Amino acid sequence: GNSVTQMEGPVTLSEEAFLTINCTYTATGYPSLFWYVQYPGEGLQLLLKATKADDKGSNKGFEATYRKETTSFHLEKGSVQVSDSAVYFCALSESSGNTPLVFGKGTRLSVIA
Amino acid sequence: DAGITQSPRYKITETGRQVTLMCHQTWSHSYMFWYRQDLGHGLRLIYYSAAADITDKGEVSDGYVVSRSKTENFPLTLESATRSQTSVYFCAIRGGSTYEQYFGPGTRLTVT
Image (cartoon, rainbow over the protein chains, first blue to last red):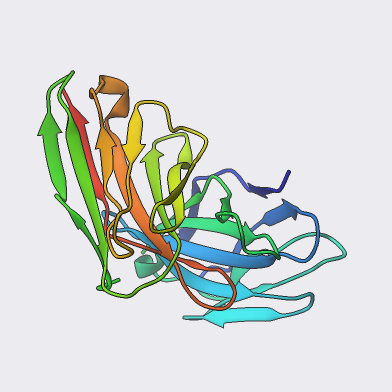
């Protein structure tokens, strides 16, 4: 079946550091890929998405590129801020769209000033 | 997202009681979902619905019941609450052409 594997957290970075959160997936067909962010006490928000190989999703300074050859969708940001402290979830959608998203377990990021 | 509301936002109940969590969307998206989120387990799917009167079990459906008589509402009922059902519950809808999901603000349920 389809699955998503994220790097274990928590990740602690200093402000302005470079961020990478690794995500790899297993899927049949051509899934769409997503990153969600969850701030403390809130629901998940869609951060960015990519729908086909080599697509780059971007939002709020975050980027992720759909790499079919390595089945990866790593999240990156060049300079993190304290306000980026949150839990980040990688997810995929089967190409048929008939089943719910498959989520990774989430990676907690803490950014310290 | 303002288009998805959950009520109540916080609930404390006793073991054995029935409790219903409500989810309402202001749009008319077909797919709706219920998840629970617990430390160490990430998000786990409880039930989902593809349309009114069509529901399907997720990975942790035991002890939960859902119904969907109207497209915009998707209530989740704990028939006889247990302490292990203490959790944060999130409702979601599926929108967009690439099947992304949008989440409500969550209901924090404590079973004593």
